[in-house]
Length: 281
Image (tube, rainbow, N blue to C red; front, side, top):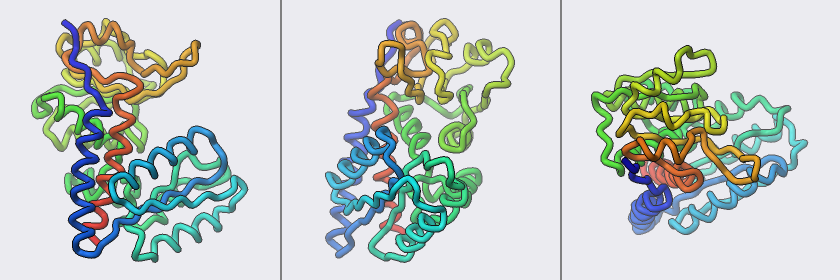
């Protein structure tokens, strides 16, 4: 068996086409969709992500503005900017690029973003709505994973799903989305016993732990869907995922590559959340 490769770039392009049509519909009513992206400090990876996000937004007709702050910006200074953007009716979505420098209370910054402008889907209110099965905005990476499963024709209802990683960014909301779609979900983490056996029993595997090739190909159930969220730098400098790709692809039914799988979908779902924020405003 050779797995079908789920091309995140292709699916992201389809999502962006949908977003573009929705922004055009809003524009015809005199509404310009606005996204404010806040970057604190000079982390090179974060700068690359912000550049890609703003480029994607502008290509879809979204007025994306960058707000660059020095690394020594105070907590109060960042909160003041978030409050300013929250009060600006031209801004429908606010994204504070993570991670923030270590002296920030990240939870407090996220909580300060008005829930109806939290297009990252990380505000406690928005996470709570996902838990209720009544989402306003869904965290972008889990939303992208669900889109990829749908594109691959994966039946989620009734499936046994394993999520590796319990972060608020990915693991926890991912488990909630799968449960809301009627999967039976096991949330695994660093203290999980018999990890290989749990993965081997899963119809759907979502790997989001940030450990290179933690999930061995031999663990994968034949025909399973494998979504690899991990992005790690190998010894040769190349990007690799949390899954032993070649061996897993020989057993899985569908699988995402790294890079080119989940990453483009995360950005596309940010745009989708942003246009939804404008529609709900």
